[in-house]
Length: 253
Ligand SMILES: Nc1nc(=O)c2c([nH]1)NC[C@@H]1CN(c3ccc(C(=O)N[C@@H](CCC(=O)O)C(=O)O)cc3)C=[N+]21
Image (cartoon, rainbow, N blue to C red; front, side, top):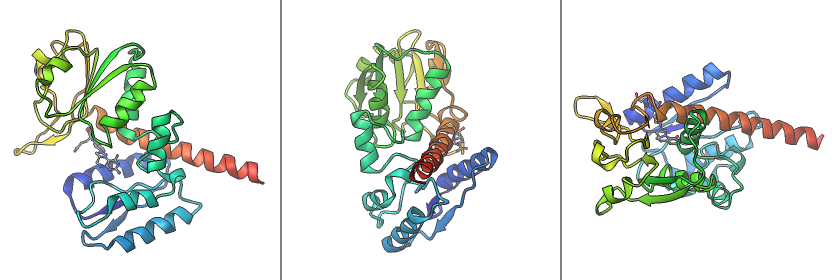
C-alpha cells in the first residue's frame, strides 16, 4: 500500500485495509511518502514493487496531491498487480466484459446483492454519481449482469424523476442527505456508498437513512455498510492475484 501525505480519512482507510490483511494472513507493507514527494520517486517505488515476485497487489491510495500525475502513476502499476482495477488496461477489460480485477467498492456492492439473494437481471438500477472509482464501474458491472442501468450526475436536474423508478438505487455522490424518502420507490433496494464527515465529526452517507429505511426493502448503513465490503474485496482481489501468479509459475516450470 502506498499512502502519500497525511489526509486523516485516507489514513483511516489504509489502516482498515492493513488490519484486514493481517486478519486474513496477507502480508502487507505500507509505504508512507511525504506529501511533497516527486513523481519520479513514486514511479520508482512502483517499478520496484512491480518487479518484486513476493508482491501480488499494489494499491496507491487516492486522492493524490495535485502535483502528482495520477494517470501516469496508475498506468505504471503492473496490470496483473492492480488490485484496485484502476489501470486503463483493467478499465478496458471491465468495459468489454473480460474483467481482470473488479474495482473494490462496486465489487463489494455486487457481493452484498448476491449475498442477500437480490436479483439484478432485468432490474432497473439507478446509479447516482459517475466517478471512475465507483459510479462508472458500478454501472458496467451491473450491465454485465443484465440490469438496465441509468447513471445520474449528483447535479442532475430533477434527480427524483430518475431515482423513483429504481428497483436498486446505488448512491455515490458525496452529498450528505441527497436522497430522501420521497425520491425512493417503495420496496427498493438502497445502497449508500457515500462517506461524509460532518462538522461534529459524525460520519454519514448520501442517504437520509432514517426516512428512506421506512420505504426501502433493504438499505445499507454508513458506517458499517459498503466501506468494510470495499476492504474485503481488496483482499479477494489480492488472493486471486497471488493464485494467478502461482498458477502461471506452475505452468511455466
Ligand atoms: N486506491 C484507492 N483504493 C480505494 O479502495 C480507495 C481509495 N483509493 N481512496 C478512498 C476510497 C475510500 N475507501 C474506503 C475504505 C475503507 C472504508 C471503511 O473501512 N469504512 C468503514 C469505517 C469508516 C470510518 O471510520 O471512517 C465503514 O464504512 O464502516 C471506507 C472507504 C477506499 N478507497
